[in-house]
Image (cartoon, rainbow, N blue to C red; front, top):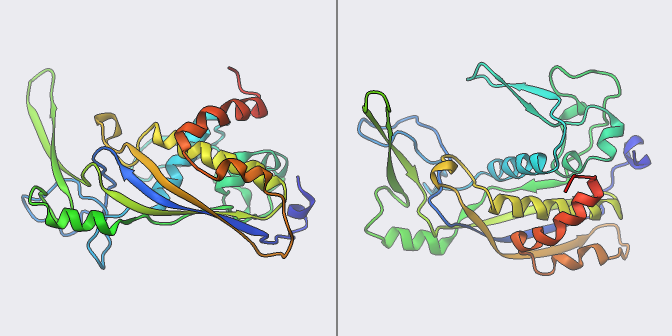
Length: 283
């Protein structure tokens, strides 16, 4: 474990900010509140900005899905149970429960860990110092050009969105159970911002490639709900990295050479062999 972490000496050296466009290649549904839905309205509504009425993508949805995908890809041990309030089963997730594990864990170092380093039902011994997350994923706002086009489009079913009817058919009785799902149309663009804080040099640079890999994994999967039905394919476009330093030192930029032009899916092809070797994953 890094001595800096053990001694509670946490200094923000700098940050890498990624800005760009998150494009929905297929219809996108991220559920919002059902409060106030009228009779005859959609069964599943999208989340909207209460002030502007625009659909948006919560940063928690992006960050959570990237973490889950990277967790699976790295074959991380799922030793912590999180009980779902609306479900009877428990869901296993990965959180480091001791300082030694945290010091070598890319997932917890990049995406953060629960306060005090402990989740419910985990031992209290060897608790981890509460270290701030390196990754901040902001809510992605609908692009102004996308809003303009959708407002002018006469084919939208609801303001800035479309409604798709899904039908579940009982295979025994052939009874149809239709429901209407609101979604953002394919082609919609959202402005995203991801901040990666740098607390240690050079260690934090070595974790940064896991963020790019997670973005690539998300492009190959889906975001939001109904993914197995084709919803939620997204792509990070026009990603521009900005590097800022706060400690007055001239840090090496060698680890950032591959971030000059960020194309997550393409970079994943070259990054993953390095990650697999580093983590000792089976080919």
